[in-house]
Every structure is written in C-alpha cells, then in structure tokens.
Image 1 (cartoon, rainbow, N blue to C red):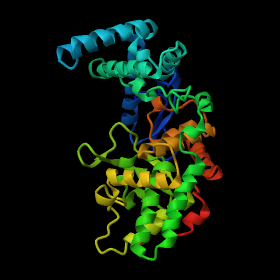
Image 2 (tube, rainbow, N blue to C red):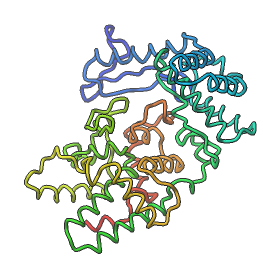
Image 3 (spheres, rainbow, N blue to C red):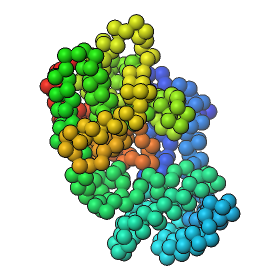
Length: 402
C-alpha cells in the first residue's frame, strides 16, 4: 500500500516501486497507466507528480493555435528567415484552410487523432497532395515554435507526418483501423524481405574465405536488427556484446551513435529499453561473438558493427540499395524504412501495440497504448508471433548457415 508521505506509490514484489499516474493518450483522453521499476519511493513520487502536472497544465492552460501560428510567422519575418511575399502566401493559405479548422484549438489539446482527421478532411475537399503537405510543413513549424516558447511537449504534426498520395491513412501507428486501409504492397513485404535474405544466403554459401563469410553474415545481421528487432540505425551502430544478455535472450539498449556529434551518446528523448531476441537472431549474435573473440584486441565493450568504414551510414545504405536492386524491389528502401515496414506489418497483423511500442522505443504519444494486457505477457506473445508470421525466422536454412 502507498504511505502518507508518498501517496500513489506502491512497493513491487522485486523490491522496487511502481506508480499509477494519469496521462493523456494518443487520442487526447486522460487515462490511468502503470509504470514500474523505480528504485526509491521518492523517485517514483517525483515522477508521478511531474506527469500529473503536465496533464493539469494541458487541461488548464489555453493558448490557441492561431495565436502561435501568427507569432511564429512574425518571428520568422523579423529574423529574416522569410520574406514579405512568403509571409503573405503562408498567411493566406493557412487562413483559408487551416485556421478555420483548428485555429481555436488549445495547442495542449491538439492530438494526433484530430490532426490526422484534419489532413484527411483537406484531402476530401479536393486539395492536391502537394498543397496539403505544404500546409503540413506550416503546422510542423508552428508547433516547433510552441515547443520552444510555450513548453509544448509533443509536435503531433511531426508524429503524424506528411500525406501519401496512395494511402488514406496518415500515420502507420495511429489506429488499427488505419492500418487496414494501407496497401501492404507500398512497404516492404515479407516476400521481398525473403528475397533479400536469399541474396545473403547465396553470398555466404558461395564464399570459401572465412573473413568474407563473416562480413556477409554481419551485413545480414545489421539489416535483421533494423527489420526484425525494429532498431534505429544509430542504435545498431552502437550495439556492443556487453549489451546482449545471452542467458535472458534480450538486448539492453541504452545508447546510440549520433551522426551530429559523431560519437556514441546515451539515448536522450527515447526510452532505454529491452529488445527480446528470437532464438535464430540470438544464434547469429552468438556466432559473431565466437568469431570476434579470435581477435587479440577483443573486448565485450567493442561495437559489433562500429560506425566507420564498412558499417558507416553511407556504406550500409549503399549495400542496402545493391541488395534491393538484386532482389528486384522497386520500393525506394532506406534503413529507417526497414524498421517501419516491420512495425507496420506487426500492427496490421493485430499484434499488441503496447508491446510493439516498447520494443520499438516509441514515446507513449506515438503509439497505440490502448490495450490492458500486461506488458510482459504482451511482449512474449509478440516474440512468438514474430516467428509465426515468418518475420523473425528469416527461414531456418539461412540461420542454419552459422
């Protein structure tokens, strides 16, 4: 039970503490959630109060979108970022299309759901995609201004993204109903992924040089991390063996390579998280560990892939393009598209969105955190279903190579 000094803080079975704060979900509704793993009562109590204050601020403060939009436009004009003609054209198109719809909305109450509906409404009015995405850029800029000067926490326009001419939905992880509207051929399909894996399989089988074989395996593992484990490219580059808990079959992810500072940095606005490993992916890591141990300068803190030379962003993308071309895939693939193709398919297959969000490292406001299943059970179900629908296995014969 919670004590008088720290109300709303509860002891957990493992000696830690958990809280049950009220937060705003992706639909803008206030709901209760449970957060575990705090080491002290004080830490958990302070976190609960901070989250509660954010909800209270959003409910009590009123700053209209129109006010922020005009302030941002004037700010750009004064700083010389835009000219008078751009100012007038931006004001004109937003006055015509955006301000009548959301001008009076409190910026703290602008949710991903109602912004998505706005974009769909603009499309239904007959505006072309280019015009809608021009308006989208204006909204992104306005909300960026609000994050700087009005302490707005989430830029929902950036979360939703631009409108695609071949899709009715706006964001790949807003609702399951949206996912049903997506033509799955517009992203990387399981069949296309299998073609890519077959190319690596052929390269591994056709080489007698152990060093080349190891390079091909690590190339394949790099893309597996992005596609199956839903990792960002910087997180893959910063991955070290000491972050893999082989006995528990998980990766403890708490750092990433930042191309801005060109160094490994802690995760900032993203969750430190556990990534659960399917057995076949775990075996790939074990194989690479065994091969890397043969080097004299081996340390478990060494980066599995590194971030220079062979596994630099440029070289990794170049190899992805080459494999895409060999596989006859027309989709313009990028490393980040691999990650989002997997997330999209998991949601399309109706896997638990809370578990997907946890493994993918998304903020709660960017996910479908609307189910009541326990996280542990949901995550295990996700890992099981990854294999069932053929995403995690990458075919047994491929991993049998190692």
